[in-house]
Structure formats: C-alpha cells, structure tokens
Length: 98
Image (cartoon, rainbow, N blue to C red):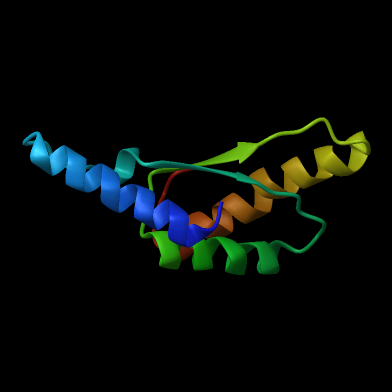
C-alpha cells in the first residue's frame, strides 16, 4: 500500500476519533510492510524514512512475512532488519525502542 494511502487512512481515523470526542494517538498507529533486505541497509533506511515523511510518524512497524523459497536469504534479511535497519531507523527518528 503506498504511503499516501496510509496517510489518508490516518487522517480518516483521526477525524473519526475526533467526532467521538477521542484523540487519535500516533504512537499506537501500526504500519505493516513487506520488506526484504539484501545487504542494503542504507537504501532500506531511506525507503522507510520516506514512508515516515509521507505518512507521518507511527508507533509500530510490523514486518510482514511470507514463505520465501530461499529460506537462507529470508533469514539473513530478518537478521539485517533487526540488527541493522531497526537500530538505524530508531536513531534516525530519535527513538530508543529496540
């Protein structure tokens, strides 16, 4: 789903919350993405920072998983995601989450 659609979803949610007297909390906004990293953490960081710029901040990034044919490469991708990409993303957005 393109970032502008995610941004529109947030706006709709926030407007709906407001009509019921509630405040939408971006820290509870979860975004799911299918990602595969192949030793390109810097490019992945740019793709995710662009997503945040387009959608606005969100509280949780969920890595969608598939049964990839090449299990070794998929496991390497998940390792890069957790050990390199997420720490770099958290640093870039000023978060201390792990």
